[in-house]
Length: 451
Image (cartoon, rainbow, N blue to C red; front, side):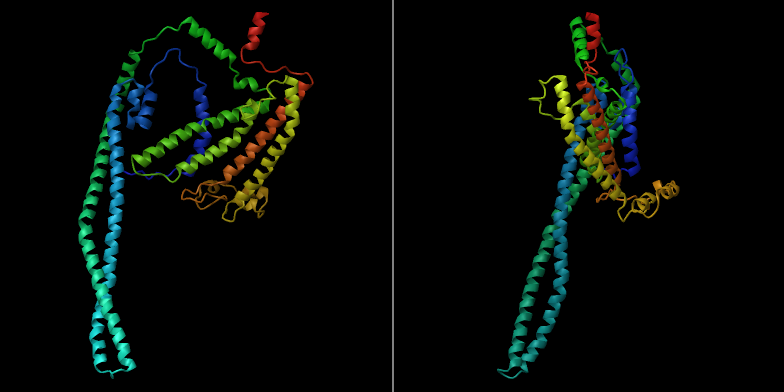
Protein backbone atom coordinates (compact mmCIF):
# COMPACT_ATOMS: atom_id res chain seq x y z
CA UNK A 1 0.00 0.00 0.00
CA UNK A 2 1.48 3.40 -0.93
CA UNK A 3 2.23 5.67 2.02
CA UNK A 4 1.40 9.36 2.42
CA UNK A 5 4.20 11.48 3.83
CA UNK A 6 2.58 14.88 3.30
CA UNK A 7 3.10 17.47 6.04
CA UNK A 8 1.06 20.64 5.73
CA UNK A 9 3.43 23.61 5.22
CA UNK A 10 2.93 26.49 7.62
CA UNK A 11 2.35 28.98 4.80
CA UNK A 12 -0.38 26.78 3.31
CA UNK A 13 -2.09 26.56 6.71
CA UNK A 14 -2.22 30.33 7.12
CA UNK A 15 -3.20 31.02 3.51
CA UNK A 16 -5.98 28.45 3.82
CA UNK A 17 -7.35 30.12 6.95
CA UNK A 18 -7.23 33.55 5.28
CA UNK A 19 -8.39 32.77 1.73
CA UNK A 20 -10.86 29.88 2.11
CA UNK A 21 -13.52 31.90 4.01
CA UNK A 22 -13.40 34.65 1.38
CA UNK A 23 -13.94 32.12 -1.42
CA UNK A 24 -16.71 30.40 0.56
CA UNK A 25 -18.44 33.72 1.26
CA UNK A 26 -18.31 34.65 -2.43
CA UNK A 27 -19.73 31.26 -3.46
CA UNK A 28 -22.49 31.41 -0.84
CA UNK A 29 -23.63 34.78 -2.17
CA UNK A 30 -24.10 33.56 -5.72
CA UNK A 31 -27.72 33.55 -6.85
CA UNK A 32 -29.29 30.14 -6.79
CA UNK A 33 -30.15 28.66 -10.17
CA UNK A 34 -33.82 28.62 -11.00
CA UNK A 35 -33.73 24.94 -11.86
CA UNK A 36 -31.72 22.25 -10.12
CA UNK A 37 -29.02 20.65 -12.22
CA UNK A 38 -26.05 18.42 -11.62
CA UNK A 39 -22.65 20.02 -12.14
CA UNK A 40 -19.57 18.49 -13.75
CA UNK A 41 -17.31 20.70 -11.64
CA UNK A 42 -18.95 19.50 -8.43
CA UNK A 43 -18.87 15.94 -9.71
CA UNK A 44 -15.11 16.12 -10.29
CA UNK A 45 -14.57 17.71 -6.88
CA UNK A 46 -16.49 14.90 -5.19
CA UNK A 47 -14.57 12.35 -7.28
CA UNK A 48 -11.25 13.74 -6.04
CA UNK A 49 -12.29 14.13 -2.40
CA UNK A 50 -14.69 11.22 -1.90
CA UNK A 51 -14.32 9.07 -4.99
CA UNK A 52 -12.62 6.33 -3.01
CA UNK A 53 -16.00 5.55 -1.42
CA UNK A 54 -17.97 6.17 -4.61
CA UNK A 55 -19.57 9.44 -3.50
CA UNK A 56 -19.41 10.90 -7.01
CA UNK A 57 -21.66 8.09 -8.23
CA UNK A 58 -24.08 8.60 -5.35
CA UNK A 59 -24.12 12.34 -6.07
CA UNK A 60 -25.28 11.50 -9.60
CA UNK A 61 -27.89 9.02 -8.28
CA UNK A 62 -25.96 6.11 -9.78
CA UNK A 63 -26.02 2.89 -7.77
CA UNK A 64 -22.75 1.69 -9.30
CA UNK A 65 -21.14 3.66 -6.51
CA UNK A 66 -21.85 0.58 -4.39
CA UNK A 67 -18.98 -1.12 -6.23
CA UNK A 68 -16.51 1.08 -4.38
CA UNK A 69 -17.78 0.23 -0.90
CA UNK A 70 -16.73 -3.46 -0.72
CA UNK A 71 -13.35 -2.53 -2.21
CA UNK A 72 -12.82 0.14 0.44
CA UNK A 73 -14.02 -2.20 3.19
CA UNK A 74 -11.53 -4.82 1.99
CA UNK A 75 -8.72 -2.21 2.07
CA UNK A 76 -9.64 -1.33 5.66
CA UNK A 77 -9.74 -5.02 6.58
CA UNK A 78 -6.42 -5.72 4.84
CA UNK A 79 -4.79 -2.75 6.52
CA UNK A 80 -6.04 -3.95 9.89
CA UNK A 81 -4.68 -7.42 9.21
CA UNK A 82 -1.38 -5.90 8.04
CA UNK A 83 -1.12 -3.86 11.25
CA UNK A 84 -1.81 -6.99 13.32
CA UNK A 85 0.82 -8.90 11.34
CA UNK A 86 3.26 -6.03 11.82
CA UNK A 87 2.73 -6.21 15.58
CA UNK A 88 3.34 -9.97 15.50
CA UNK A 89 6.47 -9.46 13.39
CA UNK A 90 7.70 -6.86 15.86
CA UNK A 91 7.15 -9.21 18.82
CA UNK A 92 8.87 -12.17 17.14
CA UNK A 93 11.69 -9.98 15.87
CA UNK A 94 12.31 -8.66 19.38
CA UNK A 95 12.40 -12.21 20.76
CA UNK A 96 14.72 -13.29 17.95
CA UNK A 97 17.11 -10.39 18.58
CA UNK A 98 17.04 -11.09 22.32
CA UNK A 99 17.99 -14.73 21.71
CA UNK A 100 20.79 -13.69 19.33
CA UNK A 101 22.19 -11.21 21.84
CA UNK A 102 22.02 -13.84 24.58
CA UNK A 103 24.06 -16.20 22.43
CA UNK A 104 26.55 -13.46 21.58
CA UNK A 105 26.94 -12.64 25.27
CA UNK A 106 27.04 -16.18 26.72
CA UNK A 107 29.36 -17.88 24.24
CA UNK A 108 32.45 -15.84 25.25
CA UNK A 109 31.53 -16.18 28.94
CA UNK A 110 31.16 -19.96 28.59
CA UNK A 111 34.44 -20.24 26.75
CA UNK A 112 36.25 -18.22 29.43
CA UNK A 113 34.72 -20.31 32.21
CA UNK A 114 35.61 -23.60 30.51
CA UNK A 115 39.13 -22.36 29.88
CA UNK A 116 39.62 -21.38 33.51
CA UNK A 117 38.55 -24.73 34.99
CA UNK A 118 41.79 -26.69 34.18
CA UNK A 119 43.91 -23.88 35.64
CA UNK A 120 41.87 -23.83 38.84
CA UNK A 121 42.01 -27.65 39.12
CA UNK A 122 45.79 -27.54 38.76
CA UNK A 123 45.93 -24.85 41.43
CA UNK A 124 43.86 -27.07 43.76
CA UNK A 125 46.13 -30.03 43.15
CA UNK A 126 49.19 -28.02 44.16
CA UNK A 127 47.64 -26.35 47.19
CA UNK A 128 48.32 -27.45 50.76
CA UNK A 129 45.56 -29.41 52.44
CA UNK A 130 43.32 -27.18 54.60
CA UNK A 131 45.00 -23.96 53.47
CA UNK A 132 43.21 -20.72 52.62
CA UNK A 133 44.48 -20.93 49.03
CA UNK A 134 42.84 -24.36 48.67
CA UNK A 135 39.47 -23.16 49.96
CA UNK A 136 39.62 -20.08 47.70
CA UNK A 137 40.45 -22.18 44.66
CA UNK A 138 37.62 -24.61 45.43
CA UNK A 139 35.12 -21.69 45.62
CA UNK A 140 36.37 -20.32 42.29
CA UNK A 141 36.09 -23.76 40.76
CA UNK A 142 32.50 -24.08 41.95
CA UNK A 143 31.62 -20.64 40.52
CA UNK A 144 33.28 -21.52 37.20
CA UNK A 145 31.39 -24.82 36.94
CA UNK A 146 28.11 -23.07 37.87
CA UNK A 147 28.83 -20.44 35.20
CA UNK A 148 29.43 -23.21 32.66
CA UNK A 149 26.17 -24.92 33.64
CA UNK A 150 24.16 -21.69 33.50
CA UNK A 151 25.80 -20.65 30.24
CA UNK A 152 25.07 -23.98 28.60
CA UNK A 153 21.44 -23.78 29.76
CA UNK A 154 21.04 -20.23 28.45
CA UNK A 155 22.67 -21.09 25.15
CA UNK A 156 20.45 -24.15 24.79
CA UNK A 157 17.33 -22.09 25.55
CA UNK A 158 18.36 -19.31 23.17
CA UNK A 159 19.23 -21.70 20.33
CA UNK A 160 15.93 -23.51 20.85
CA UNK A 161 14.12 -20.14 20.83
CA UNK A 162 15.81 -19.24 17.55
CA UNK A 163 14.62 -22.49 16.02
CA UNK A 164 11.09 -22.06 17.34
CA UNK A 165 10.81 -18.36 16.41
CA UNK A 166 12.31 -18.56 12.93
CA UNK A 167 9.30 -20.25 11.31
CA UNK A 168 6.53 -18.07 12.80
CA UNK A 169 8.65 -14.96 12.18
CA UNK A 170 8.94 -15.76 8.50
CA UNK A 171 5.24 -16.66 8.38
CA UNK A 172 4.19 -13.38 10.01
CA UNK A 173 6.44 -11.48 7.61
CA UNK A 174 4.83 -13.30 4.72
CA UNK A 175 1.35 -12.51 6.11
CA UNK A 176 2.26 -8.84 6.45
CA UNK A 177 3.58 -8.71 2.90
CA UNK A 178 0.46 -10.52 1.61
CA UNK A 179 -2.00 -8.13 3.24
CA UNK A 180 0.07 -5.13 2.17
CA UNK A 181 0.02 -6.36 -1.45
CA UNK A 182 -3.70 -7.11 -1.22
CA UNK A 183 -4.50 -3.62 0.05
CA UNK A 184 -2.22 -2.01 -2.54
CA UNK A 185 -3.70 -4.00 -5.41
CA UNK A 186 -7.25 -3.12 -4.33
CA UNK A 187 -6.29 0.52 -4.07
CA UNK A 188 -4.94 0.52 -7.62
CA UNK A 189 -8.19 -1.09 -8.76
CA UNK A 190 -10.11 1.80 -7.17
CA UNK A 191 -7.79 4.30 -8.87
CA UNK A 192 -8.45 2.61 -12.22
CA UNK A 193 -12.21 2.84 -11.64
CA UNK A 194 -11.83 6.50 -10.70
CA UNK A 195 -9.91 7.17 -13.90
CA UNK A 196 -12.71 5.54 -15.91
CA UNK A 197 -15.33 7.58 -14.04
CA UNK A 198 -13.32 10.76 -14.62
CA UNK A 199 -13.52 10.12 -18.35
CA UNK A 200 -17.23 9.26 -18.12
CA UNK A 201 -18.11 12.22 -15.88
CA UNK A 202 -19.60 14.51 -18.60
CA UNK A 203 -21.79 11.67 -19.85
CA UNK A 204 -22.87 10.73 -16.32
CA UNK A 205 -23.79 14.34 -15.56
CA UNK A 206 -25.86 14.65 -18.75
CA UNK A 207 -27.66 11.40 -17.94
CA UNK A 208 -28.38 12.57 -14.40
CA UNK A 209 -29.71 15.93 -15.63
CA UNK A 210 -31.95 14.19 -18.18
CA UNK A 211 -33.47 12.11 -15.40
CA UNK A 212 -34.55 15.15 -13.36
CA UNK A 213 -38.31 15.47 -13.07
CA UNK A 214 -39.50 18.81 -11.74
CA UNK A 215 -42.31 18.36 -9.23
CA UNK A 216 -44.78 21.24 -8.88
CA UNK A 217 -44.72 23.04 -5.54
CA UNK A 218 -48.12 23.26 -3.87
CA UNK A 219 -49.56 26.56 -2.67
CA UNK A 220 -49.46 25.30 0.92
CA UNK A 221 -45.73 24.61 0.65
CA UNK A 222 -45.14 28.06 -0.85
CA UNK A 223 -47.11 29.74 1.94
CA UNK A 224 -45.25 27.76 4.61
CA UNK A 225 -41.90 28.69 3.07
CA UNK A 226 -42.92 32.36 2.98
CA UNK A 227 -43.98 32.33 6.64
CA UNK A 228 -40.76 30.62 7.73
CA UNK A 229 -38.67 33.10 5.76
CA UNK A 230 -40.46 36.12 7.18
CA UNK A 231 -40.39 34.96 10.80
CA UNK A 232 -36.68 34.31 10.82
CA UNK A 233 -34.57 37.15 12.16
CA UNK A 234 -31.59 37.37 9.84
CA UNK A 235 -28.13 38.38 10.97
CA UNK A 236 -28.30 41.56 8.90
CA UNK A 237 -31.25 42.70 11.02
CA UNK A 238 -28.92 43.11 14.01
CA UNK A 239 -26.50 45.47 12.27
CA UNK A 240 -27.07 49.13 13.16
CA UNK A 241 -23.55 50.53 12.86
CA UNK A 242 -20.08 49.72 11.59
CA UNK A 243 -19.18 47.80 14.76
CA UNK A 244 -22.15 45.49 14.28
CA UNK A 245 -21.26 44.96 10.64
CA UNK A 246 -17.65 44.19 11.59
CA UNK A 247 -18.80 41.62 14.16
CA UNK A 248 -21.14 40.03 11.64
CA UNK A 249 -18.41 39.83 9.03
CA UNK A 250 -15.91 38.30 11.47
CA UNK A 251 -18.48 35.79 12.72
CA UNK A 252 -19.37 34.68 9.22
CA UNK A 253 -15.70 34.64 8.22
CA UNK A 254 -14.58 32.22 10.91
CA UNK A 255 -17.74 30.11 10.58
CA UNK A 256 -16.38 28.73 7.31
CA UNK A 257 -13.33 27.39 9.16
CA UNK A 258 -15.57 24.55 10.30
CA UNK A 259 -15.70 23.42 6.66
CA UNK A 260 -11.90 23.28 6.62
CA UNK A 261 -12.03 20.98 9.65
CA UNK A 262 -14.28 18.57 7.73
CA UNK A 263 -11.75 18.26 4.92
CA UNK A 264 -8.74 17.99 7.23
CA UNK A 265 -10.24 15.33 9.47
CA UNK A 266 -11.49 13.46 6.41
CA UNK A 267 -7.91 13.49 5.10
CA UNK A 268 -6.61 12.31 8.48
CA UNK A 269 -9.04 9.36 8.54
CA UNK A 270 -8.19 8.32 4.97
CA UNK A 271 -4.45 8.73 5.57
CA UNK A 272 -4.56 6.76 8.82
CA UNK A 273 -6.84 3.88 7.91
CA UNK A 274 -6.42 3.55 4.15
CA UNK A 275 -2.73 4.47 3.71
CA UNK A 276 -1.47 3.60 7.22
CA UNK A 277 0.09 7.08 7.35
CA UNK A 278 -1.30 9.07 10.31
CA UNK A 279 -0.34 12.74 10.28
CA UNK A 280 1.47 14.70 12.97
CA UNK A 281 -0.25 18.00 12.13
CA UNK A 282 -3.99 17.52 11.50
CA UNK A 283 -5.17 17.44 15.12
CA UNK A 284 -2.96 20.32 16.26
CA UNK A 285 -3.86 22.46 13.23
CA UNK A 286 -7.58 22.05 13.90
CA UNK A 287 -7.65 22.60 17.65
CA UNK A 288 -5.58 25.76 17.19
CA UNK A 289 -7.99 26.85 14.48
CA UNK A 290 -11.04 26.19 16.65
CA UNK A 291 -9.44 28.16 19.48
CA UNK A 292 -9.04 31.17 17.18
CA UNK A 293 -12.58 30.69 15.87
CA UNK A 294 -13.98 30.72 19.41
CA UNK A 295 -12.18 33.98 20.21
CA UNK A 296 -13.11 35.87 17.04
CA UNK A 297 -16.74 34.71 17.10
CA UNK A 298 -17.29 36.07 20.62
CA UNK A 299 -18.38 39.50 19.35
CA UNK A 300 -20.80 37.85 16.90
CA UNK A 301 -22.35 35.86 19.77
CA UNK A 302 -22.80 39.04 21.81
CA UNK A 303 -24.40 40.86 18.87
CA UNK A 304 -26.86 38.11 17.94
CA UNK A 305 -27.48 37.09 21.58
CA UNK A 306 -26.55 33.50 20.74
CA UNK A 307 -24.52 32.97 23.91
CA UNK A 308 -25.88 31.03 26.88
CA UNK A 309 -28.00 33.13 29.22
CA UNK A 310 -30.52 32.40 31.99
CA UNK A 311 -33.79 33.93 30.76
CA UNK A 312 -36.08 33.05 33.67
CA UNK A 313 -36.29 36.67 34.85
CA UNK A 314 -34.89 38.42 31.78
CA UNK A 315 -37.25 37.17 29.07
CA UNK A 316 -40.54 38.65 30.43
CA UNK A 317 -39.03 42.12 30.89
CA UNK A 318 -40.00 45.10 28.78
CA UNK A 319 -37.41 46.49 26.32
CA UNK A 320 -36.49 49.34 28.69
CA UNK A 321 -36.02 47.05 31.66
CA UNK A 322 -33.92 44.74 29.52
CA UNK A 323 -31.84 47.72 28.47
CA UNK A 324 -31.37 48.78 32.11
CA UNK A 325 -30.39 45.21 33.06
CA UNK A 326 -27.93 44.93 30.18
CA UNK A 327 -26.43 48.33 30.92
CA UNK A 328 -25.90 47.59 34.63
CA UNK A 329 -24.45 44.11 34.02
CA UNK A 330 -22.24 45.45 31.23
CA UNK A 331 -19.84 46.54 33.97
CA UNK A 332 -18.93 42.90 34.50
CA UNK A 333 -18.75 42.36 30.75
CA UNK A 334 -16.23 45.17 30.28
CA UNK A 335 -14.16 43.91 33.22
CA UNK A 336 -13.93 40.53 31.50
CA UNK A 337 -13.39 41.89 27.98
CA UNK A 338 -10.82 44.46 29.12
CA UNK A 339 -8.91 41.85 31.12
CA UNK A 340 -8.96 39.51 28.12
CA UNK A 341 -7.66 42.27 25.84
CA UNK A 342 -4.84 43.31 28.18
CA UNK A 343 -3.68 39.82 29.14
CA UNK A 344 -3.90 38.68 25.51
CA UNK A 345 -1.66 41.55 24.47
CA UNK A 346 0.82 40.52 27.18
CA UNK A 347 0.75 36.89 26.03
CA UNK A 348 1.16 37.94 22.38
CA UNK A 349 4.19 40.13 23.11
CA UNK A 350 5.73 37.39 25.25
CA UNK A 351 5.21 34.90 22.41
CA UNK A 352 7.16 37.16 20.06
CA UNK A 353 9.89 37.86 22.60
CA UNK A 354 10.91 34.26 23.39
CA UNK A 355 14.71 33.77 23.21
CA UNK A 356 14.51 31.51 20.15
CA UNK A 357 13.05 34.33 18.03
CA UNK A 358 15.71 35.75 15.73
CA UNK A 359 13.55 37.82 13.36
CA UNK A 360 13.19 41.58 13.26
CA UNK A 361 9.80 41.45 15.01
CA UNK A 362 11.21 39.35 17.86
CA UNK A 363 14.14 41.74 18.22
CA UNK A 364 11.66 44.61 18.53
CA UNK A 365 9.54 42.66 21.04
CA UNK A 366 12.65 42.24 23.24
CA UNK A 367 13.38 46.00 23.02
CA UNK A 368 16.62 45.44 21.14
CA UNK A 369 15.60 47.61 18.19
CA UNK A 370 13.06 50.38 17.77
CA UNK A 371 9.71 50.14 15.99
CA UNK A 372 10.79 52.04 12.88
CA UNK A 373 14.09 50.15 12.77
CA UNK A 374 12.06 46.96 12.84
CA UNK A 375 9.96 48.16 9.89
CA UNK A 376 13.12 49.09 7.99
CA UNK A 377 14.54 45.61 8.62
CA UNK A 378 11.54 43.83 7.17
CA UNK A 379 12.23 42.05 3.89
CA UNK A 380 11.03 39.01 2.00
CA UNK A 381 13.59 36.88 3.84
CA UNK A 382 11.85 37.66 7.12
CA UNK A 383 8.81 35.79 5.79
CA UNK A 384 10.35 33.00 3.70
CA UNK A 385 13.71 32.06 5.26
CA UNK A 386 13.16 28.88 7.35
CA UNK A 387 16.10 29.84 9.57
CA UNK A 388 14.27 32.97 10.74
CA UNK A 389 11.87 32.32 13.60
CA UNK A 390 9.45 34.89 14.96
CA UNK A 391 9.11 33.55 18.47
CA UNK A 392 7.09 30.79 20.09
CA UNK A 393 6.45 27.54 18.23
CA UNK A 394 4.62 24.34 19.11
CA UNK A 395 6.44 21.49 20.81
CA UNK A 396 5.61 18.70 18.38
CA UNK A 397 7.31 17.83 15.09
CA UNK A 398 5.12 20.22 13.09
CA UNK A 399 6.57 23.25 14.92
CA UNK A 400 3.88 25.68 13.83
CA UNK A 401 4.33 29.26 15.12
CA UNK A 402 2.05 29.97 18.07
CA UNK A 403 2.40 33.74 18.23
CA UNK A 404 -0.28 34.35 15.54
CA UNK A 405 -2.81 32.55 17.74
CA UNK A 406 -1.84 34.79 20.64
CA UNK A 407 -2.48 37.88 18.48
CA UNK A 408 -5.85 36.47 17.47
CA UNK A 409 -6.65 36.54 21.19
CA UNK A 410 -5.92 40.28 21.08
CA UNK A 411 -8.20 40.66 18.07
CA UNK A 412 -10.97 38.71 19.79
CA UNK A 413 -10.70 40.85 22.92
CA UNK A 414 -10.78 44.05 20.85
CA UNK A 415 -13.89 42.91 18.96
CA UNK A 416 -15.58 42.07 22.26
CA UNK A 417 -14.83 45.52 23.69
CA UNK A 418 -16.12 47.24 20.54
CA UNK A 419 -19.28 45.15 20.48
CA UNK A 420 -19.85 45.90 24.16
CA UNK A 421 -19.64 49.63 23.40
CA UNK A 422 -22.15 49.21 20.57
CA UNK A 423 -24.52 47.26 22.82
CA UNK A 424 -24.24 49.86 25.60
CA UNK A 425 -25.05 52.65 23.13
CA UNK A 426 -28.16 50.78 21.97
CA UNK A 427 -29.28 50.25 25.56
CA UNK A 428 -28.87 53.96 26.32
CA UNK A 429 -30.97 54.88 23.27
CA UNK A 430 -33.66 52.42 24.33
CA UNK A 431 -33.74 53.84 27.86
CA UNK A 432 -34.01 57.37 26.50
CA UNK A 433 -36.90 56.32 24.27
CA UNK A 434 -34.91 56.31 21.05
CA UNK A 435 -34.88 53.62 18.41
CA UNK A 436 -37.58 50.98 18.59
CA UNK A 437 -36.60 47.33 18.91
CA UNK A 438 -35.61 45.73 15.63
CA UNK A 439 -38.45 43.87 13.97
CA UNK A 440 -37.94 40.46 12.40
CA UNK A 441 -37.18 40.53 8.72
CA UNK A 442 -40.34 41.29 6.75
CA UNK A 443 -42.54 42.08 9.77
CA UNK A 444 -42.39 45.86 9.24
CA UNK A 445 -43.51 45.47 5.64
CA UNK A 446 -46.52 43.37 6.73
CA UNK A 447 -47.50 46.02 9.28
CA UNK A 448 -47.40 48.74 6.61
CA UNK A 449 -49.48 46.58 4.27
CA UNK A 450 -52.00 45.94 7.04
CA UNK A 451 -52.34 49.67 7.73
